[in-house]
Image: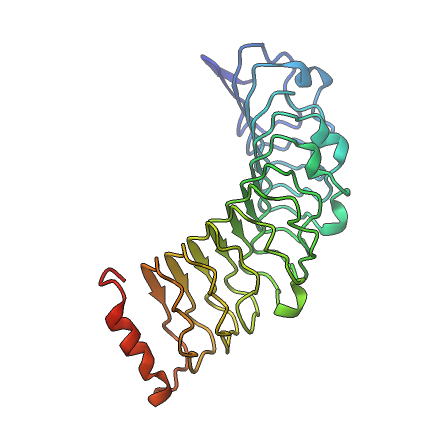
Length: 294
């Protein structure tokens, strides 16, 4: 049924409804994508194949996070299924999982059991793009470095969502339903290692306050409804190199709003309804005194 090539087993695109029995020890990568495998199709013996570290299961017919995956799997591709629920028990089996792709499923906030992701204690990258989440799941693993929850229905981020994520470096929440009112005060201040934050295509009226400035290099705020940037909005972002505020509703900028951005290399501000009178003249003066590389 499958083709073996050294440490790789190719079982993809074979109309399988279950994982074949007898996956041998020594196999490291298992290709099972684009089949018709459902949740009943994972034999218990699969969990004990210790050598498998990468599994491709995208494009199948899963409606729950599967049980009995190889116990030492580090990279898991489950995108383009119909997964709706994620249990703690399923993730508790995968203590070495580092990278989890769950894009393009049907996962809702109520479908994620409380603390389910925290069971995956080694998880570094979590991709939940294109699902049905209405809020960021609470109880994410503390060592997470990258989180993508873009293209969901998130309207609320609680102050608990990122509380322990002191290792998170990249956060993408593009294409959701976020307003300033839906983001709890101090939500982002816990993210002390954050280097890139993208909150594109939402409904913000001003930049989120309390952004952590220690490491933040890239900040993407384009395609919102931003009509005002408070004077202190960027005052602690001294490491910031890229800022995009294009495609918003900005008519003017308060003098001094960029004064603390001493490392800025790229500022994009196009497609705003700028009101060009004397009150914006300071921008041309500011541009004279910043590095020519901007």
